Amino acid sequence: MNRYAQIVIVGRPGCGKTSFLREFLKVAGRVEAKVPYADLNQPYPSRWLAEASGPVTAPVLVISKRGFVQKRFILHDTFALDDDPERENQHRQQLSDTLRTLLAADIVLHLVEASALLDVSSPTSLQVKSMKLHGIDLDLWAYGRSRPRYMMLITKSDTIRKRFCKRDVRRVVGNIPVALVSSSDGRGLLEVKQHVWRMA
Image (cartoon, rainbow, N blue to C red; front, side, top):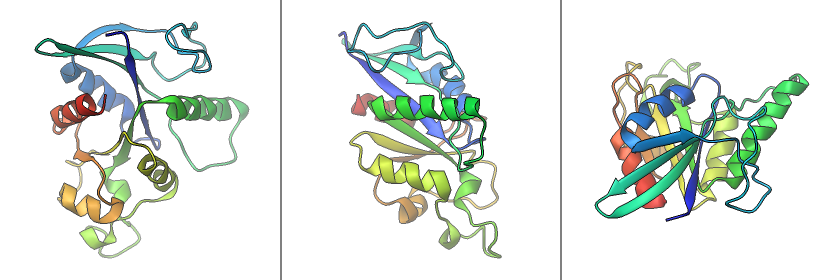
């Protein structure tokens, strides 16, 4: 099998993208190598360039097997997306790199920190009814819903006092693939692996 599914991990600053990637690689399959930054403007498969100012870590090649079936994934960690327009040129270039990788990805894993779903200005902020998406997460969700292979991962779900389930999250985001994950205890990682396998 020569096709490599391009998987991008995106989210706001501090949502746990790199921590998730590190833990996900432990269950995802056989990690072959970190590969050079992909030139997404070139036809596949001859589109590798020396890594320059790309993502935080080089894309990682993973080979996952089930019986005689083998699938290959390239996971892309990305620079965080935020809403601040007053950024220096280097930061804007990093955002451009993230958006370029996002637009070319086959599978989008959108990470949202659990506490970011809660309206902290509300006295009932720990109640499910106050859950909502904000800013760039709202934009990523709107974009993801237009894609056939998109999944929202609620990170750090073990760190808030209010426990909510996927049904609660879907009241806010609709009927899309959702997983509650935690890099500290590994919850939800196998579920993400299974879903990525089905999407690839």
